[in-house]
Length: 313
Image 1 (cartoon, rainbow, N blue to C red):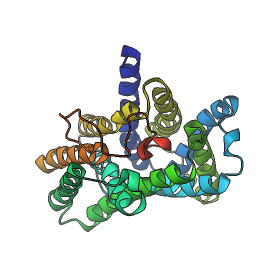
Image 2: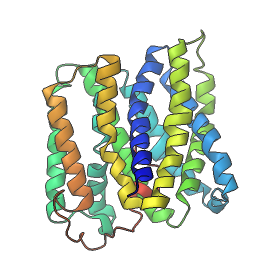
Image 3: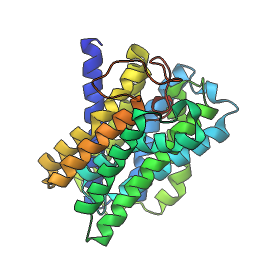
Image 4: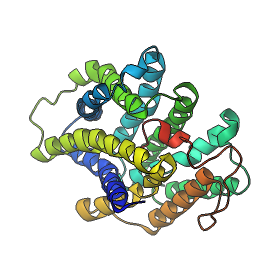
């Protein structure tokens, strides 16, 4: 990878990792979760749709809007809502850690739905490690607080939605330009949420920090971030571009602890390590220090489920 590629990846991880912080600040500033998600999707669409139109990526969706609507609901609108509602009750850093479990849920679902991505051999160990990490977080950081437990479960359900979405995209939207999928799902998601968002428009002017956070979350953390992601795919391939998934939780933790004074517990650190290690092993089918061949059906130049559609953020 070139220096430019590493800079793009670091910028992308910083933007996506900051999304959890921006959600929390928006909520604390008096913005309703539904309006937060609508603004995020609408602003992201404003950035991506003109670019997708110019590159004719949006035109490739002709005849596929039913599939795009399904993805917009299962992989974008509903998970974003679950994460945003969940952050009412848990720290932004913890939300970022829990979302890192997406490759684990993808591998678990693939065991029944996708032979190419079915975990084999050492990948099963990754599943076990990741599940242990999730159990540890719930047992140490969320136990004894029903609201926090509910918030954590919401974020985990969002991760399941992301996993369902990426497997669906692989099966039903193979060959469609990823930029078109991203722009289309943001556009459809914002249209679907518009009626509910109109009922949740803030009655009083939100805090300036909340307004700024919404703008950064939508235009930057969603629109510009997606554009960087698909630029990376074009430059270094989907497999290497997907490595950003393992950098995002670290940024989420740093932002939450540094800027919001969120606690950094031993359980959170150990849970993060287990989830990231488990996600890597489950997704790659090998231990991090081994560079041998991947399991059958997996190739470095394949657009794997975690990169063919809108990524998990």
